[in-house]
Image (tube, rainbow, N blue to C red):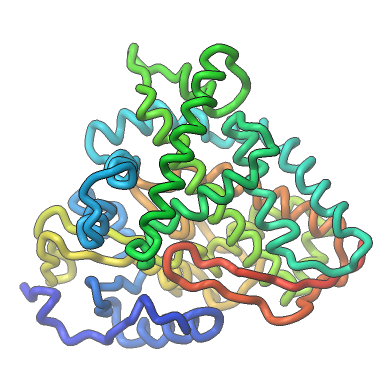
Length: 404
C-alpha cells in the first residue's frame, strides 16, 4: 500500500487568484487528464466522481473546520465556539439527532410555502429595472433576492435583509484562506448575529409564526428538543449556507443562459423546464467547486493510504463532468437527459446540504420569472468572476434585455 505523500502527483495551487472563468475550467480539465489525484499546499485534490463520492460519504472523514481553526490559531472566543457548534463539524449520534429534528423544515413540501414570497420579491426587483433595459444582474437581483427569502424563512423583517447579507457574507469567509486577515470582522459578525437571533427566538417563543425559527422551537422527536444554543447555530447555518450560495448560483445561471439564447427562449416557452435548468446549472458551474474533508483515521482507497489528518478536497467541478456519469458532460444543455446522477454541488453523504431543497426552489422561481419577463437576454460586458476560494460567484454580471 502506497502512502499518498509518496506519490508523484501534478500540483494544484488552490489559492491562485487567476483561477477563474475559462482558465479555471481549463486547469481542472488538464489536471483530470493526468489522473484522479493531485497535490495542493494543504493536502490533496480528488478529481473523479467515484472517488469524490467515496471521500464525501465515508464516515472516516469529516469537514476540517476545526483543523482550519487550529491552523489559523483560533482556539477560543465566539468564532471558535461557532465553528465548534456548526453542524458541519458534528458527527455520529449528535449529528443524526440534529438532522432528524431539523430535516422536516426543509423537505420539498415544507419549502413550497415560501414560493409565493419568492415570486413577490423577484417581481419587485425586476420592476425596479424594467424600463432600463440593462442592469448588473448581481446588484439588481442575485444579491438582494436570497437575503429577502432567508429573512422570510427565518421569520425576520424583510427590511433586515441587508444586515443578513452582510453577516452571511462575512461569516462565510471562515471557510476560505482569508480567515487570518479577516478574523476580527468575522468574529464581530458572529457576535452581532447571535444577539440578533436571540431576540428573534424570544419573539417567536412569545408569538409563534409560520417560519423556520418557530418550526425549530416546536421541533420534537421522542421528547427531545433543540436547546437555545443549538437553535441559534442551526439558524446561523441556514443563513450562511443560503445567501451567498444562492446569489452566486443564480448569477452563474443567468450568465450561462445569456450565452445560450435558444435555451433561454425554450425556458420562457416551457417553465416546466426550470427544475432541469437548475440542475444543469448546478452541475455545469458549481459555486462550491471544492468540498473539504479530513481523515479521522488512516483511510485506504485504490491501494493508496491517506494517513489520519490528511486534508482532501473533493472537486465537485470534475465530479459533475465525469463522462462515466453524464453524456456530453462539457456541454451546457438544459434539455439533456442527465440520468439519476446528482451533481456533487450540494455534497453527498450525511453532510449533504441542509437547504438544498430551498435553494432549488429559489433558483427555479428566479429562472421562471426572469425568462417570462426578459427576452433578447445578452451579456452587456464581461462578467467579473470571484475567486474559487470558498464560494465561487460573480462580483458583477452586466446584462441587457427587453421586457416581453
